[in-house]
Length: 154
Picture 1 (cartoon, one colour):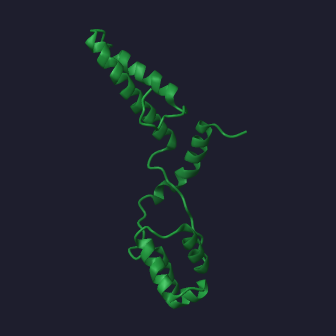
Picture 2 (cartoon, one colour):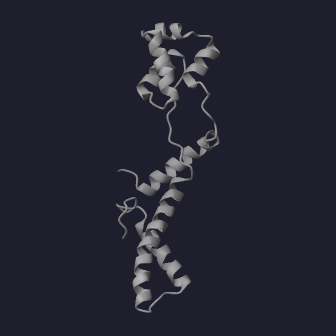
Picture 3 (cartoon, rainbow, N blue to C red):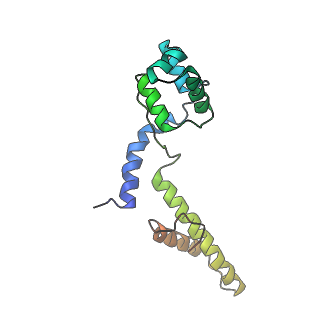
């Protein structure tokens, strides 16, 4: 049985929380391929020989890494040739749970703003406390529903 979205979020949040300290870690100014290769004392032609490619291909790989155009498969082969593991993650800036909750609140607020506009026109405006309570209830109902991330409200 597949996990619910809420369970999947909790599981991933738990796993990814350990990676948060790495968010500020910058890529070496000449890229990871070049940094590791240089630290190993390996020339571009030596790496090329290990990969069975030309030295100009290594230059292309290192350049494409710097310009965010390198392919993951290429990085995986290079990492293997450098006796490294390629680690690939998305690390959320905030928890996944927080992202979903914020999105649900924003969507609920947009929807209820339109309703509130019509209520003001009819002189039936809600108090701030009642409006906040409505946003909270609607947001809770939107979590884990299809369309949460679409532009359409409701």
